[in-house]
Image (cartoon, rainbow, N blue to C red; front, top):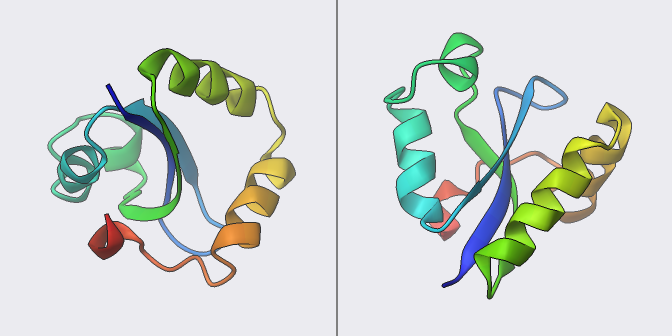
Amino acid sequence: MPAHVYMMANKKNGTIYLGVTTNLRDRVYKHKEKIYEGFTQKYDVTNLVWAEEFCDVRDAIVREKQIKKWNRQWKINLIVANNPEWNDLYETV
């Protein structure tokens, strides 16, 4: 089953959330609509700024755990390398 590791942000260089899902469009929609209580709702983290696709959810989970250990600047560098303006990529998924 395909899966995605993704990062959401509330603004350029703002608060970052990292997650993994097997349905990226639905998950981002739920973040945008604040259906999930918690971190993304509290900090208004609603913009999809980075995503990486995997054929197997287990590989996506490994990658998520790897990135979670990174410092903030490395995560920012990953976002900027693919999305320098931190545009919301929701409409492209």
